[in-house]
Amino acid sequence: MSAFKLSDLEAIIAMRARSGDQGSWTARLFAAGMDRAAKKLGEEAVETVIAAIRGDRGALVSESADMLYHWLVVLAVAGVPLSDVLAELERRTRQSGVAEKASRGDGA
Image (cartoon, rainbow, N blue to C red; front, side, top):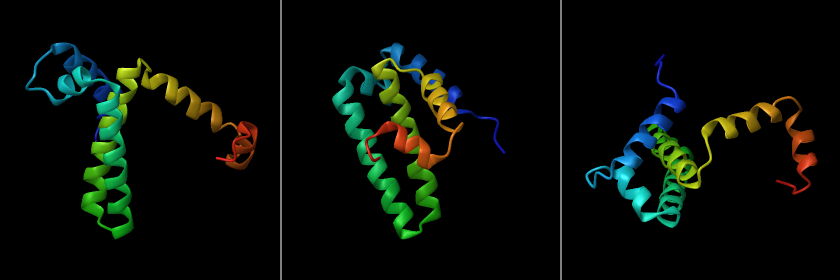
């Protein structure tokens, strides 16, 4: 198993975002702003769903990586650290999924 962590990717994204290097996809996404970054995240999420429905394991792995990368870019553009999301996930795991959803009151 790889020792690579989402926090490693978060750090790489932060470094590249500040680089101003127009040869960097990350820098270009940051320069384009939230609308572009969020649109790319949505596109990758749809492609991930399609790969899952088709049962295409290779595409599912590849598209999942793209989706996670773009998700982290969106978080970074918004100024939300990965640790905040992980803390929320940790909080939610302290109760059942059904109880957690009921506590939100949004039916999600």
